[in-house]
Length: 252
Image (cartoon, rainbow, N blue to C red; front, top):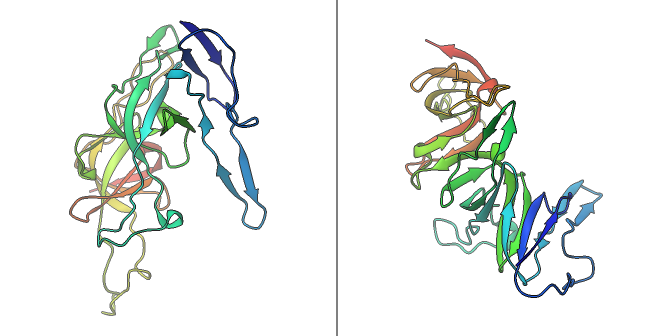
């Protein structure tokens, strides 16, 4: 069994294990393998990313260092009311199952292993990582730090934040003005106060040791209004996960 290692922008520093005799790499489409292609729309400045295609003769993909391979969860094709959504209207998934992890990285004089286990259900930053099509399934290679949290259940309230992140239950926005006028959803001011539900283990210091966060579960905090990633719980409650550096004050 031979091993071929790539390390470039198109592959995201991964090792591919090949089965069978070494016949060389054959491209299934012109220059479509190992290259992250980008199509730009000048009118809006949007970037469309095509997944890197891994040739069928490669059976596995092993992430390197602190990278993680996640099998992407399929996008919702229907609304909760049963309405079929077109592809353009389907929300981009932000979650999936960890199927492989790297060997970790060295910080200072210490080796730091990846803290996420294979089989974990995770939520990751929306625009992080490199998409890979492997065995007809969409996967994502990303760094451990790009993973927001681990889902213990299907409910956002049970999310376990990672690194220096905190999970916050958002305070409900006011329904009325001080004068008694009812506010619509579009005119309600976005809240920036909430209660900390869970905290991550903390960032790594120069020697690879965790630094505990300065806030704890149960604290009421004021946070930056447009920071973090928002989620909705099973009961409709709004939650947000953000880094502790986006917290501005503890309220009491």
